[in-house]
Length: 200
Image 1 (cartoon, rainbow, N blue to C red):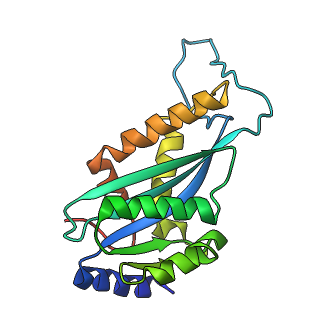
Image 2 (spheres, rainbow, N blue to C red):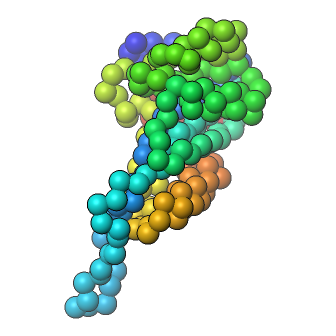
Image 3 (cartoon, rainbow, N blue to C red):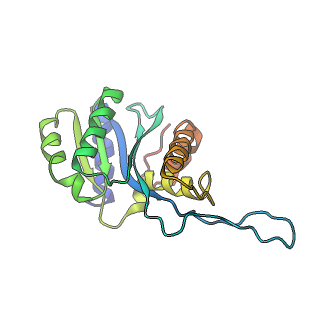
């Protein structure tokens, strides 16, 4: 499906009275995302980090536009030291639908876990309420959730070097929670989406 097909899906969502929901996954590592910082003249900033750590926390995020396009919301779930497989994604979808309580047009990438079992069977069994659209291959710019990850890594988590996995999880949760509680920031991310899915 191309962007034109997704635009058709947007019109169908309006007729159906459905929320439009973007979903994506990301990983946050122990190593910091380095950015420029301030320091006294002649004193080079030193960033201490845990060397060669492979510890991580995986995050799944959803960004929704309400049926009337008046409300934008975000949800997140976390998996320490694991990636989101089909079972984890299905659990997230079920929890998401309990919160939304309306039909949903789901837009996400072509990750195998999105297209395979058990998600595939669940979508087929719930096609009266959920319609899934796949983004074109290699088109992260069409998913505004990608902007959430970029913003988190280069703003609240920039130059953050956790010593333990628990600290990484806590700070990642706080960062994403702050983003999710800022409707103006979420709307700005939607304005950067070339699909013209801007809330009113």
